[in-house]
Image (tube, rainbow, N blue to C red; front, top):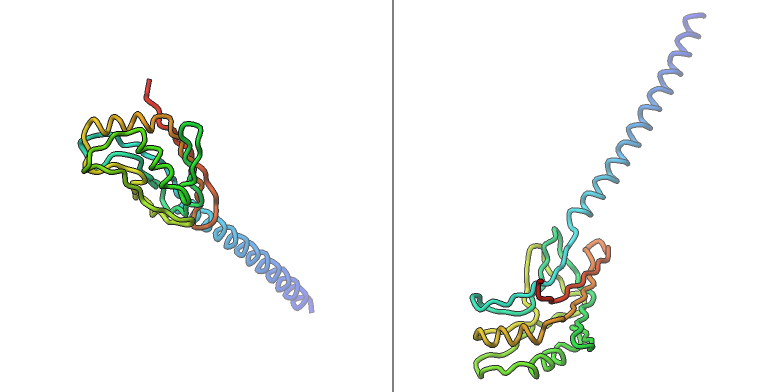
Length: 176
């Protein structure tokens, strides 16, 4: 009888140990899933910025939108402020372009172009798109374009594909 009681006690003890190990393994598995999910979310974080390109040595000069993050950006809002006037890029790009054109005397072959973006536009990772720019321009037009845009402030609200929201602001200033 004594062997049966000892065997029963050992069986119950081994059962409790097996159950404790299985709960520990389940906890580690849940933690690993949580950490993997965090890593996936970090691996697709966008990082939008604005490049101000004013060189006569390249194909275009103007304002360019760049995503140098790891994931695509979903653009929610672009606000442009110039000379105490605010413009919504999604609904008023022509109004902003007309304001710029009044300050620049362009040759017939040169015109101001802009890329039309809509609410929810995607900008893939590691890509750059011109927003407002000159094409077929001279050095004088580049300088005039720069003078008109001096002090422009561009605020962009965007989100990642997981819905995390971000905001960036860029101002065109002459370095001191």
